[in-house]
Length: 133
Length: 133
DNA sequence: TTTTAAATGCAACCTTGTTGCGTTTTATTT
DNA sequence: AAATAAAACGCAACAAGGTTGCATTTAAAA
Ligand SMILES: [Zn+2]
Ligand SMILES: [Zn+2]
Ligand SMILES: [Zn+2]
Ligand SMILES: [Zn+2]
Image (cartoon, rainbow over all chains, first blue to last red; front, side):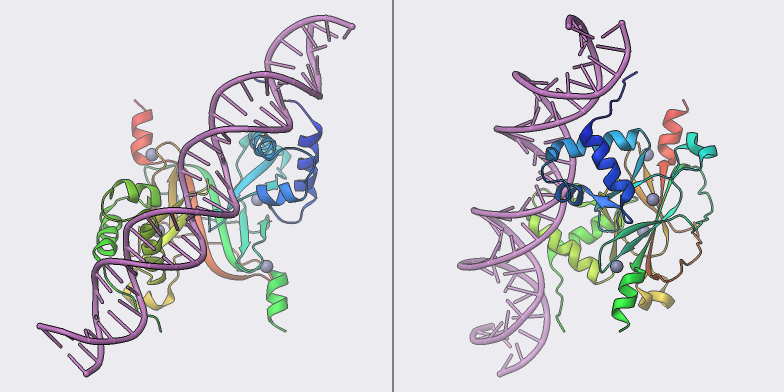
C-alpha cells in the first residue's frame, strides 16, 4: 500500500484548516499561503488529507467546495462517515460544521446509503446580527 | 417587472429536464442538444427556469450542479422552497429527487434557516443490482 | 549515508461559468 | 398586417477552477 509523508506544506495547510472557525476553499487557502507552495500542490495536499480522513469535503449549495477538519468520536473513527449538518451563509458565504444538529431521515428503499450530506442555508449568527440593526 | 418569453430552445430544454428520470447537468443538456442552441444560451435558459421556479438546482457532494423539474404541491407553490431529499450515486453519478423521504433536524440556535439541501449518497438501485451479481 | 518512492514546481491543458455587444426573435401595440 | 420595444440569442473573449505529465526535490526507511 502507498505510504503518505508529512511535509511542511501539508502541515501548514492542515493547521490553517484546524485553526479556522469556518470551512476553507482552495482559493482561500491559496490566499492565506501566498508563498508556501504551488496552486497544484494545494489541490494534491487537500486530496491526501481527505483520503487520510483528517479533513472532510463540503459542497455548498452553489457548488463551491470547502474543507473542514474532522473531529471524530474516537470510537467511531473507523466508520469514516461524516453525518453532521453544515450551515452555509448566503450573505458572507461562510460554511460551518454544526456538530450539535442531528439529522434524521427515512432510508429510501433499494438505495444503499453510504454518506449523508446535509446543508442548511440562510443567515449565520453574525449576519443575522448585522442585519437586525 | 421584467417579463419572460418562451422560445424554442427554452421549451426544448424544459422538456428534456421534465422527461428525465434523473437530474441533468449543463454538460449533459449540451450533449443531448448539440445543434439546438449555444452553450451560453443553455446557461441563461437554466437561470431563467430556476428563477421562474419551474426547475431547481442541486449541488452534488462533489460540487457538480444538476437541474431537476419541480413538482410543487399546488397549495404550497408560493413557498418556493425545495426541502426534499436528493440521492447522488457515487458510481453512475446519477442524481434523483426522493420526494418520499422526509428529513428532520433540530434548528440551530441563532441561525436563520431559509433553505434545506439534503443529499444522501451511495449506490442507486441500478448500481446496487449490477454490483451484487 | 545511501536509496527509493512520495511530493513538488511548472507548463500546458481542459472544463465550467461569465460578460459585452451587435443581431435576431417574441409578443404587444398600432 | 406592420411597426415597435425589449427579451433572447450567437459569438468572441475572458476568468476561475481543476487536471495531467514530467523532471526535480525531499522525506524517511534501510
Ligand atoms: Zn454570514
Ligand atoms: Zn463538517
Ligand atoms: Zn448508480
Ligand atoms: Zn429535487
